Every structure is written in structure tokens, then in C-alpha cells.
Length: 422
Ligand code: EPZ
Image (cartoon, rainbow, N blue to C red):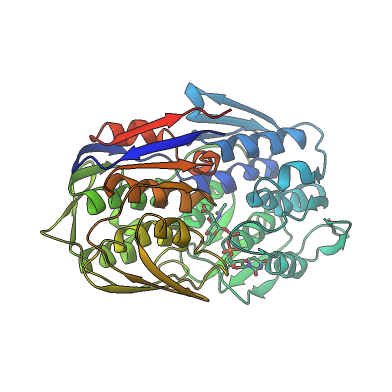
């Protein structure tokens, strides 16, 4: 397993290109199952999660190929499809559950393994099941698999979710595009990745309104055509790299960044004393002056502060002036980066869903271990600002969601290198 060595090396200055969104691409790719015609995605990120989704779609019978060093993905599912998504792939990545809605809509049946829990929580599927059942699907759980089928195809319906689940919204919307009649999803998730999915489905001939709001209306159609769609900018990668100059000092321009993707996050940065300026090419970020100020953070569904930036924000607040409280309201176990940050001298108290961070002047480099995707990059950020060397192990977590992280940070003056593991 590879490790990454970082060493505090002073302020960072330069330009970082932001890739296409992992969490948009992971829902756009299963959309190919809805049509017999080819779907092409451009601006795709080069990540191990995308390769996992590629293997899953290929196991279902879709043709998937990556062009231009992985930035373009062409897919086609005109052939016979296998309705079963096996555990050995699904267990690697929860987003595999996003083939459930499309397979049901296209084939009228599907067998998808339960993803199983992961480091950050149990991650049940009840909201997905309720949403697809509302469209007429009969779903049984047997031997760790969801067995889903419909009698006579999906039928449009009005359904309100108990929680604005991102994945359940995506599964419902994709399934409803081919249902008979009109569907209305209430308490829908509003994330930019859902807006991106709807824009792609519309290019494919779907009739959908309300994306980005809590109510999405879908008029079912008989079939969808092929399309070419650019993946939206990754707002979580964007927010992660915006924190690099915030933690280290200096000034970094994130190419492709847009404030509308991260308004709540940018407000928190402003409160902490970090300036964010829109430029023609993206967002320029720098510390205003002196030490970062402590702020309180509560993670919420979009447009609130993103849970996927909570670990990275905690790394910033470890060296802030004052005491910060972070409340994690989306996942039940998403503070595993805290004990690793404490090995670097951070002062953090975790009680249930709350973490209290008492800012210290400086962190000290130490060997630490990545536990999940976003925790791994928070340790990299902390190491960039710490005195001495930090070695982050198990960086396979990092490679799931960040392409070429060393290259992007090296270009801004960071001291960072990958140590190949056995
Ligand atoms: C998506 O996961 C993202 N993943 C996650 O990003 C992100 O953290 C999450 O949305 C919240 O924004 C992808 O888009 C591939 P949810 P998803 O359904 O769809 C509970 C990353 O780091 N829940 O909105 O799985 C669930 O357990 C990843 O890139 C149920 O109880 O998130 C969680 O506590 C991590 N029952 C909460 O809702 C369900 O049926 C939010 O889950 C579904 C979810």
C-alpha cells in the first residue's frame, strides 16, 4: 500500500486545475443503462472509483471505454443486459447502488447487492427502497441482495422522502424517466451533482423540471436517446484545494471553481479570515492576514455546509485562533480523522456528533493513517502546514477521489511525494 510523505514547506502559491466531479460522474455513468444509444461523458475525473463503476457496468453487459487518458468515457448498453450487480464489486463502492433505478426502468427487474457499511456509517438503503416502491417496484432483501421487480413496468407517482438522500434522489429520478405517467419527488436532494444528472437526462430526451429545488417533476417517456455531456466541476475537490493556501498561507487559484457550487463553505472561509475572489478562470484564495479565526460548522444537505468538506475544515481549524465546534449531522461516524490529527498535536474533543477543536499555534508532523476518502486528504492538508514530516499511510482511500494530488500540490510549492508500498 502506498503512503504519501508531506513536509511543512511554507506558503503555497500557484494554480490548481479542478477536475470533473466524482459524485456527478458516478451517477451519470449508470444513466447509460436507460438508453440503447451511446452516452459520452467529457471532463471525467481519472479516479479509482470511476474505474470501479466501469467494471460494474461492464459486468452488467454495457460497453464502456475511456479515451483521452480517461477524461472522456464512452458507454453503450444496446446489448443484452445482466440484471445482477455482484457483491464483490458493490462492496467496494456504495455508489454501485445507483444502477438499481436504471436497471429497474430498463429491464423491469434487478438484483443489486446491499453495499454493506463503510468507515463513516451503516449507510442503509431504506430511502432508496421506499422511493422505488412508490414507482411500483417490489423489492425484497434476500441473502444480502435487493431483489427488485415490477409487474408491467414502473408507474409515475408522487413520493416524499423522509430525508433528502442524494443517492435515493438520483435512483428515483433515473427510474422515473421511463415510468408510465408523471412522478413528483418531494424533499428531493438539491446537490449540484443532481442538477448535472438532470441536465444530462434532459439531453437524452427526458422531461424533468425542478432540479436543484426540493421538488422534482418527471414526465415519463417511452425511450431515451444517446447524448454527450460534460461532467460538472468537482465542488469537493475545489473546496479541498481552497483550504491549502488557507492552512499554509500564500495564494492559489483553483481553475474551474465557481462560488455557487460552495456558497455556504465560502461564507465560512470568509468568517475564518480567508478571502475568496472570483477570477475569469476560477477562484483565487488567500489568507487575509495573520492567523485563521475559529468558526463553528454544521454539516447539512445542500445548500448547507457539505459533510464531504468537514474533515478538511477540521484540519484548518486545528491551527485557528480560538475554539471551534463542528457538528456532523449527515453521517454517524465521520470524525475518524480527529485521533489522527491529535497525533499531530491537535487538541480535539469528540462527543457523539460534535467535535470541539481548541486551536494550537502549530501542528507537528507524525506518521498517521487514512481511514476514509475525505479523512485522508484532511491529513495531507494538516501535514502541509505542520512542522516536520508527516507520512499518511493507506492512501488508496485518497486515490478514490483525488486525481494526481501530489502533482497538483507540488506545482504550488508543496513538499509532497508518494512512497510506493509493498
Ligand atoms: C452521497 O452519498 C455522496 N456519494 C457522499 O459522498 C456524500 O457524503 C453524501 O451523498 C451526502 O452528501 C456519492 O454521491 C457517490 P445520502 P449517498 O443518501 O447518496 C442516510 C464522498 O466522500 N441514508 O444523502 O450515499 C445515510 O446513511 C462520499 O464523496 C439512509 O439512512 O448519501 C447518511 O447518513 C461520502 N437511508 C445520510 O442518509 C438511505 O436509504 C446521507 O446519505 C440512504 C441514506
